[in-house]
Length: 259
Image (cartoon, rainbow, N blue to C red; front, side, top):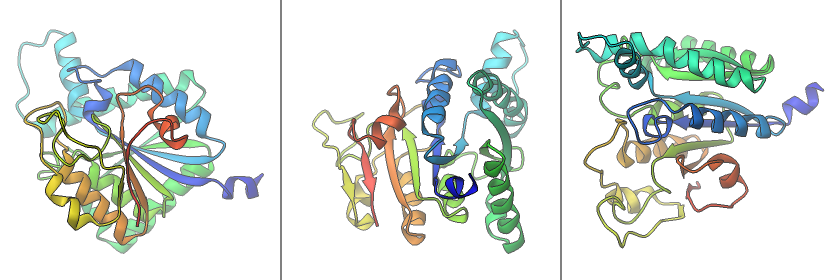
């Protein structure tokens, strides 16, 4: 049994705010159900770690639903309100599929200190060993720069590097990296495989608005971290039902960063 567990591949999946909200201003229970369903189908072959954004979106939803007139104008405070709400949704939905979840809040400083890195690696490993799905998010209550830019793209790459993941999948709101921004250019062409980051860096043109803070630039930065650590990275359209299973089965088109 232990031998079988050790043979599993390690898969890190980054879920951004735009994926979690399905392009709206509300957390989508349906999308979280979709992620849970896929997790169940992949658990025999993969140890899965989720890096999830969405705390601030969850806070906005909670405040709106409960009719609070006074707005909280601090993103750090909003994250503090929303993080337990977001984890509550994950716990409820994943629990209905027989999945156990655990929350891990991190900052980039956790990757700069050797002891902190080892503790993080050991904690995630112990959770996986005991059949828990680690759900990692930036500790936005103490973050400053990261809460504005990145939407956990870089964080997911750092997590993948310290646990020596076999694959990082970043769920985006488009099919992958294009030669032009598909939100702004109808004739944009999807780049299905990238081996040279310098050649594609100029293609990371950002869209003008959206619910998340991450864009293609931060994904290119995440790919650079993966390249350094020899980890394959994919950008997949998280809006598609079954996006992870379909990408692994090569049923949909996406961008693969292979180093």
